[in-house]
Length: 607
Image (cartoon, rainbow, N blue to C red; front, side):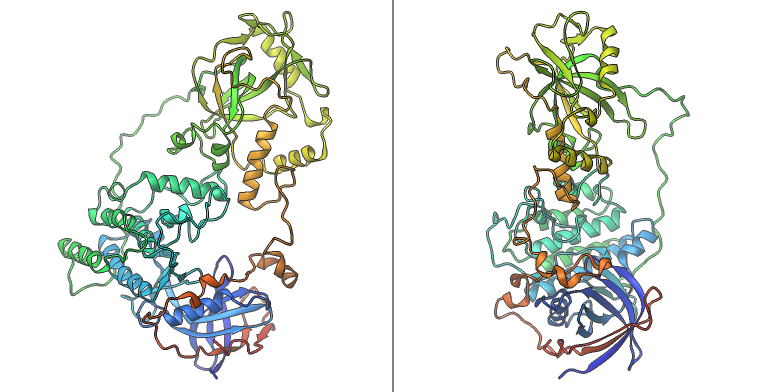
């Protein structure tokens, strides 16, 4: 039976998705350790930290693999004590303004590539390679500790290049790992392999070299799924050679070559190491001094000409839409969900979508937002027939709403349902000046429809609930619209819907519903199916987490395919020593009650 240890938690160091990391002390030896604490029900058989402890133990034998000191599981929590590291490479880069010295980046490549080769030789993919997980050793400043194996798992034996585990965008599921560093195969939902850890490392090295990457993990106005799609699109646009411009090309070549590897191809680790060793020597660095250089990289002064102070101008609408124009308008669903606007470099990718219906509309108001310089517009919908049964509407007819040229259709009315909404103008196609209201009638229409609210309509319960959600999340991102020339219903191949009486309301609720699914906030409108408790895997353990509000990200059962049991035979795994058991936790953190402690139920003795 393994030795039982008592740990004292001293200071909180960080918070992750499923737990908190503390600096702790092993009371008998006085050794400082890092202690992970994670909330988990006793009903869960395959837990996060149990898996991580066993996996790290199986990877021992490389200097970058942290030492495991103890593991323990209690009624509501599990704990894992391991070697304590120092500052992360991410933090050191932040202190330096983003970039690191070339010598240091090359040395990190020379340490990380053999480490990943070691991990891969044991049949494991890390799946979350990033600078946050590279820590300086407290005992040896030239040593790197590589941490956090919570989502590491055996490589799938699936060898098909096209085998897709899931579609992250279509199924609104999160990308594995960390968005900024994830490989393109991860974005596609494909089975992962050795190449994907190396691609993530290539992004890390390029980031440390450049001080930035041309994508961000949380673009403003985007949902969680939308952010993943946007990052994927950006990665697709940038090759390694483009990212490495102005820097040694070896870093860009490393990215391009790892992307080109086949799923079942063993990467040429030794060749990669040789390339960076040659670069190290050609750059004039000494083979006898391979210590990291953490001095700040001097910033180069900008060579861009400075603009002279110019008087501010009234912002102008770039698309030249004017109130009174009668056009066809179509909401851009994907662009709205992803939060991609016309000033985004990814706009061309989503601008051509045609997922919603074109509807006839009158332009009520146009302006350019002073905060983001985006053109905005408010619209009134048009429909054929008599006026709405409920809610205000205005008929197009002489002496009321007259047009130039004269309006050719009978019984056409303008309306807003159920309230006025502003849109960001994505695109204006073709000549939209075909029909327009008389100038003196534009203000009449604006006056009649500007004050329209949902209270003036007989709305059913789903519509009222949808409006409540729209109001609560009105700042989630803009609604993008495409403007096209009007097509009359008698024109050939007219794709405009003249029969609707709900304007763009259903399109808007569909967009907000997709945002709700992506971001995890409740949506009660009928277009979004409710979760069946019998099918919801979160419901199984929900009763054992009550009263633990600060631990909302509760663990669920780990899929058995992601455990060490699926490792193929014949791998060079080390003979594992029993992991000592944590018998007691003494919590002395400032924010917690120092009288509280956990005592083990002995469930860790089989590790």
